[in-house]
Length: 315
Image 1: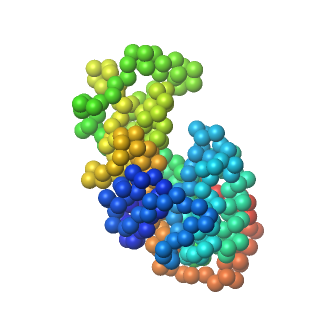
Image 2: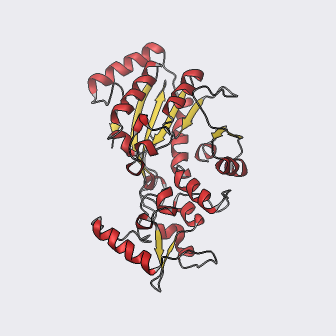
């Protein structure tokens, strides 16, 4: 959605049928419901390849198996780049790639450099781009031109209240409330984890990171709203979507659990648009020759501390 808002025509590939239906129901580009492999063939020659290879292999909650995890999608991403040699390739993943997954990230960067790209990366905070959420993700751009990560566009941080205050006290017929035993479990969980701030949704600040797990997963980590009468209820799909910066006209397909997963897995559209505008500027700027790419890479190696060859990590 962010890239379409920035002016691109998108063609999607999505293994989950509900997510593919959501894509086709809201966006202008087509979406193929297909589980990609390294042998997949694509129906067009793209100018840009963008992707979010599954983050679970590198996330704290996903056992951090990295390249050994069967969900690892980076070989597929790299094969698509190798096949089509796009002008620009961008992927997004969790911060954990800089830590537990650092060695594998270095291999990915080196592979992209070997294909003739200049590779740059940065941790972007969603709240800096108008998203009412303190979400931080690693973005990596492989290009042959002039790339600039988007500067923060919103000096004022939007709060969770800005996004959902009109819904916070609403009690829909299908609202799900925490029981007394769940409240007791939460108190025990927060005490054991030395949680200083309760994990309720605080309307006076941006929310913590929205994930599949805290939208509909384990009780202890669940995102919830505390009502004036003291009861706490789970966030609705629409509230989670607003915290991700989806507009209300954007409709999600599938069961409630499927919709929660789609919301939690998404790159916030306003953050995606900021990256999309940077991509647009890169495509319409200077294109470097092979020798210029090599020279630029050599200069950066000499001037900057790099992670694995050509990756300037800014945090």
